[in-house]
Image (cartoon, rainbow, N blue to C red; front, top):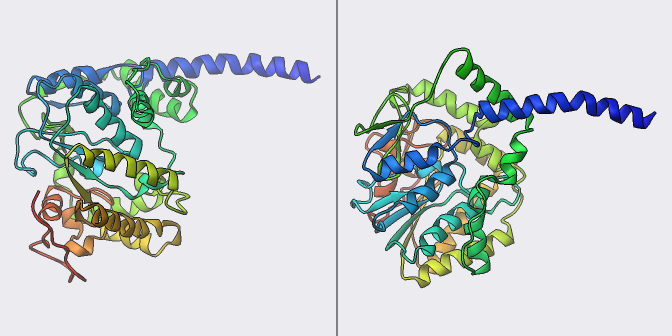
Length: 371
């Protein structure tokens, strides 16, 4: 009976599996099986900003961007989307490249650094956006595996051997129900509504969609640029129940020793190369930060900040910013959502000064030198 049941189950599941794999491959909501990243990198190398870019493999983009660099930037930025708005003008240099990637893990930053090192060239300065989840062993972040070969080369101190572009993680997505839900919508748009995403190289810095700029940073379209305070606050509340930050901080019970040791090895190597290093902590929206402060499940955010400040002091590394928005008097006017400051907010943090129009009295203001 069991044998017959398994045969019937296989006969039922196989057609559905084929259907799911087909939809996921051709719908490809996250562009895992197509390759717009190389074309975007080429446009950037030619001096064009790129608008109308789909959801892409940001790690693959960094690999192509670094491979196409004609000269090594004096300053590079490592970190997550929280620091992706940082531009060359913020660092007062044109020799600049922002390598931020969404939901960056410690492995991401190490891998991107290793891509530079493998070329035999390193920047003079690294600005590192430090997010609290990088020491969370339960963050579930696996996007870095696109650059696993570079990360492995750093850990093992061996020459870099690039892996095949078709990683097992991408293969698994062919049979992912959640990816299927997204891809079926994308496939419908392609086949029925005849929608087609075409990359738009442009000299304009602000366009109707998110734009990737020549210096690696991003700029948002008018929909985000013109958000009302009420809309920002609504987004911040939504981030409390399902935002990327909350997801990455799930099951965060302690600062992983493995990640602390790996971080120390990484930072020590950077320092040994006589690279000027700056840590930047980007504030959260007041509502989200208060939520994390009052919820014991997210207490590691403040513990991590205390740890990283002590570490920076010990290593004599410049540290700017804080996760606490009150230290800079930042309210909803300085955010896009719960975890992303806008350009005005970022400038205030990088200057180390309070906002010019505070809505609440700061408990104390952190000062820091300019970049």
